[in-house]
Image (cartoon, rainbow, N blue to C red; front, top):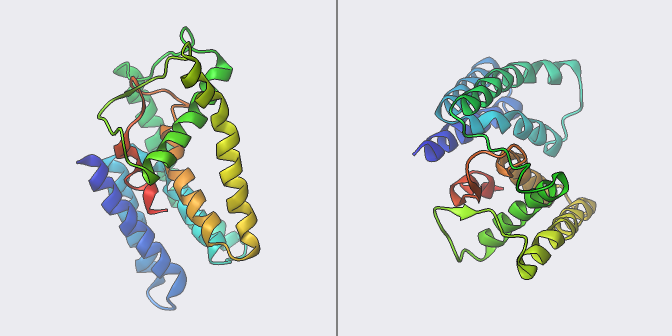
Length: 209
């Protein structure tokens, strides 16, 4: 329920930010509503801390030039993200939700697992099979599984390179790709929370990209 709720307020915040940059009148109201809905989103689920990255992407997509005004506009969004991000991390630590994977995986393997998680999200978005409420970490002692994990960075980098190359035509594909990446980044288990490597519900909002 919290995933759906935070996504609702998140998208409302984005909609009013788009109104803010496109309409000539009522700008104060539009940016105020965008910030309000962002606050409601982050109160629903801390994953909304990614929203400042999305509004920056929108500025780039719309061709807005970097200026002092542009930076000042982002201060409320960034401040809310920092405060609630710190609170969320401390809360997760207190309840023991942040896992210590050092005994199980080396530092390099944990980086590879983040790429693997991203690859799984992309694959399951295109071919939604093998869905589950729980996806445990892979057993790297199994050759086939280990091969997929070690190959995942190359696959992800290739897809990102294609998105970057597409900018020659227009910014749409790269914008959509970065929208997905910005909103999925926090659940790629770089900071491991819980015992699952991926969870389908984490892609509800990123998949809009």
